[in-house]
Amino acid sequence: MSDTAKPIEVVDTTMRDGNQSLWGATGLTTPDIFAIAPTVDRVGFRACDFTSSTHMAVSVRFHREDPWERLRLAAASMPNTPLSMITTGKRFISWRPCAEDVVALVFRTAVRNGLRRVQIADPMNDPADLAQMARIAKDAGVEEVVIGLTYSVSPVHTDTFYAERAMAMGACPDVDRLYLKDPGGLVSAERLHDLAPLFLDGFARGPVELHSHGTIGLAGPMYVEGAKLGFGTLHTAVGPVSNGTSNPSCETTLRNLGATGFAHGLDRDALQAVSEHFRALALDKRLPLGGTPAEYDAAYYTHQMPGGMVTTMRRQLE
Image (cartoon, rainbow, N blue to C red; front, side, top):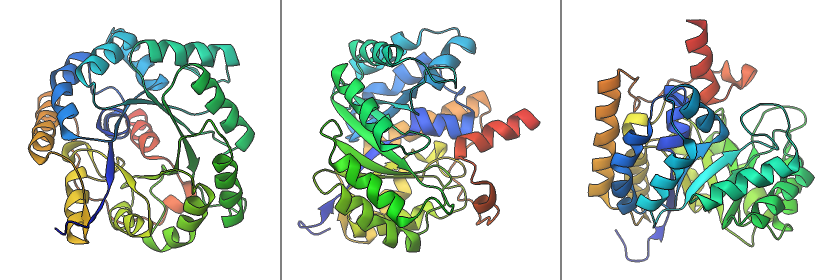
């Protein structure tokens, strides 16, 4: 690897999006997470996509655990890795909109228990709502506010649509980072060539991240192309909790980046230990193992169902 190779950051999604996409958000308990947290901290991830209001509800309803204690214990065990919460608009637990003071209370309580980063994705990609949520998060003490613009295929979701919203977020002083959020895994490497300049130029003042799912097998090559185009941060899960409806595999992504001239600062030994931990958990709890790339399925462009929703729907239908 050349000394001049461009470094790429990695956000780990294993405990939030991976757990949600493959295991219906019910797979992990606080002891499961606490046992591996110090090792995760050694890997060197840019951040850890750790929780959401859905995960907090699950920890209470399914595991009879205190979600604030989970956050507190993990934050204490991972001082070098910012823990992140994702929220979709003004809501908490319920899918109905809640009052702004409730959102502010949630953020303040999360920060008090160790949260440092928030990922915000408004279902309508509404710039005013996103800016308002960013302000609420900053006022609550969140260190890093990351806005996600959600990708969809429709007559409304044009290049102009995304360009305008990326520029609006670039003009918002409370937004630290922007990311392309592709929950259906629908963005191909070819399509990314059109989207990349809209995001990177619109938010030229700060880092831009890339988030996708392996639902129809496009995310792996798309991530490599994203690094070439200028996305400096990629969202991945460790092998046993990756691919399929989950996010791309961290291990495979690192190999592909290395083969195409990019560097990273991750501790591979620690990463292997984390991967082995989640593999053992999956086998012990009889949870579905990830890691197998999905075949291309054009039907996803019709229903555009997000990864986590696919798994939940299948389980409910069964």
